[in-house]
Image 1 (cartoon, rainbow, N blue to C red):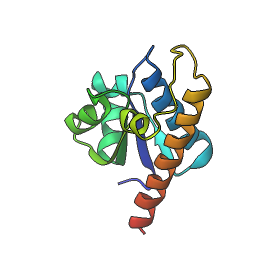
Image 2 (image 1 turned 45 degrees about the vertical axis):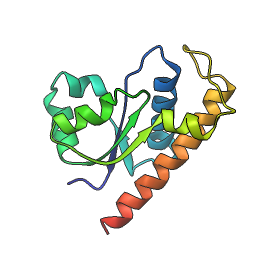
Image 3 (image 1 turned 90 degrees about the vertical axis):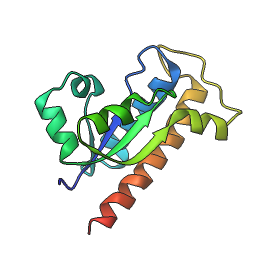
Length: 134
């Protein structure tokens, strides 16, 4: 098993909740936990890409889902991966009822705030999972 944590967000293209999950994931892997977390495209996993499936099987995974269909979690599990944590944007929205993202092509102010909150939660989970391995 690799030392890095694999964060897989849903595809959710054209949907604000999917955009929030993807943006939060990129914040984590590119800034907050660079070198300790990585990501891969869910569509590669769905199509059975050998490298994506191997990466999922060799990593502790965090699934980030935008909607109740939970495509990220389900596809990680179907590929034989371990979902060590599951983050749902819908849960975040329930906790932050005052924030209402409305744009689908880019994150508006509320979407940015939700993405930052989710990124902090994902980063904390990356810390927890990497510390548990030591």
